[in-house]
Length: 259
Image (cartoon, rainbow, N blue to C red; front, side, top):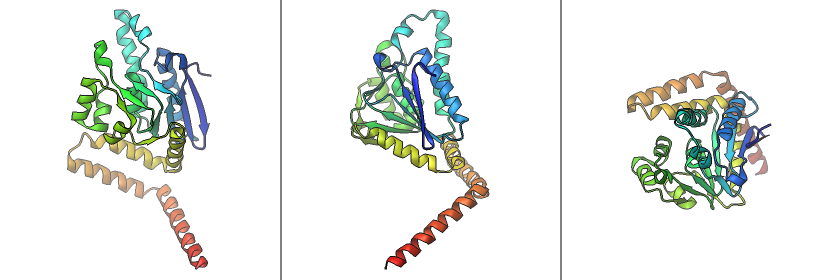
């Protein structure tokens, strides 16, 4: 169905695998277009409540397709970068949680793709880097700054030194690091947990996280409590709370019966 990505649905989540291995998953026009189409389709799929993006075990993405970029005419520059913005914005503002499972290198545009996801699970072999300044281009700053803070984001972008997985974990760039043979297992386990959560609450949390960064302290609290009131009033909350309390009660009965 797709030429540059593979889509697998399983247990409430989907895995989207970048599939240009000979080009080290360079983000071509076609790959960006297909990612946009895939995410649009999955957003409307009620069976999918979380998405994993990965490049496989050995490389996440080497970045933009430089061969493709080198042939752009002046008239093509605007539409070309608009297509980059379109697919990144699709993922960055996605209503469902998105996990980047990064094995191997994530450079330039590949690094950008990882940072617009909600959660990053990295293999111990993962390497992140922004070499764009060497080509006279600017990396994507704002998603990175939200993850690691202003001063560290400036350093990463201005210096352009590669960052290993352990250092990425230390500075808050990634959420978890796992051995190469287990990082996809960790990503799948995370997706299963997210898929089991209330989709309404997950969407609300994502919106709150995006909005509070732009509000003063009081306005941020007001927003969060407004969301809390709406969620508490929902029928879904009542059903889930009843189910939770029933499970807790039954578990206590089981423990007492074993005494």
